[in-house]
Image (tube, rainbow, N blue to C red; front, side, top):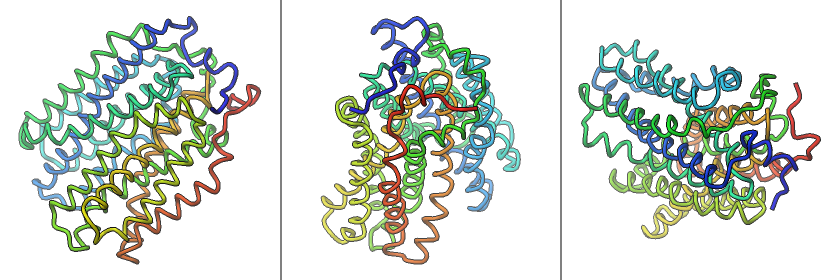
Length: 408
């Protein structure tokens, strides 16, 4: 297994090292909170889009509105490490959730799509505070021997929440006050475990008040952040274009949606096994292996379009699982690679890299799809995956103790 810096475990937790039981309770609180927040995001995305469509907004405006949370993360990200250092993890998470509850309820007060742009930006900002703080919490609280299991459970619950959001929306409907109230209620539920575990939150070391810029972390381990970018890029292309690609190759709408569901299920069920493997195998090698398997599925996809459902489904299930593994394994390597005052800035940069991938993926994929309808999507993904395999290994190995801190 990759060897972590000698001081990683000591600095990855609060100054008074918690007992194993206290550590598990602390991690369980964050994982439970992530499940409820994921459900809110999975509900709110289609809810806002469908309401905008009902108001007569164009597809372009709906797409721009959906980009507001990503814009909030990219603009506010550099300030979040300072906020976490000044206020602490639990207060920032609770503040972000409280603000987001208020924003969700404000959506019910009017139907102006121009106002909804501002509200969507603020919602993205509040959610980003919880996202970055929760991953910082896990990175600092997880023991080195159990880091893979903790991150795998977190990623699984987050994905399960996202997947359950649209199902909740089916029950609430998309019109009126009720669906927004349910989304706000879910955020209230997400706050409960954080509130109960606030005294078990890791304490950020005083040295983190150096307020390192998140982008400084990328120079230290570019491969770790490339994994986050690769995950966002790949998932955004899959969710945007897999159904369209299937429809244009003689499949009906139900078949296209089913294939996308298999991709999402793969992302859900593979994360705990990958986390388990990450605690027993060299982590950087495991990440390379997931990239290689993803490359094989990407190359195989255009070739199996006309084959049996069993083969198509297996390819999509593996594709989704391995693509989701980029984030899981990247986050595990991030917690191992960065410790002490560097961790908060590094976690923020990791989320920003994923967000940048989510923004650029559909643009690149759409252009490639238009230029080469059958192989364009596979081509652009294969090129990026190959670049990672060639350039990645030197960028995410564990540092020596002397180089484990970011430089100002």
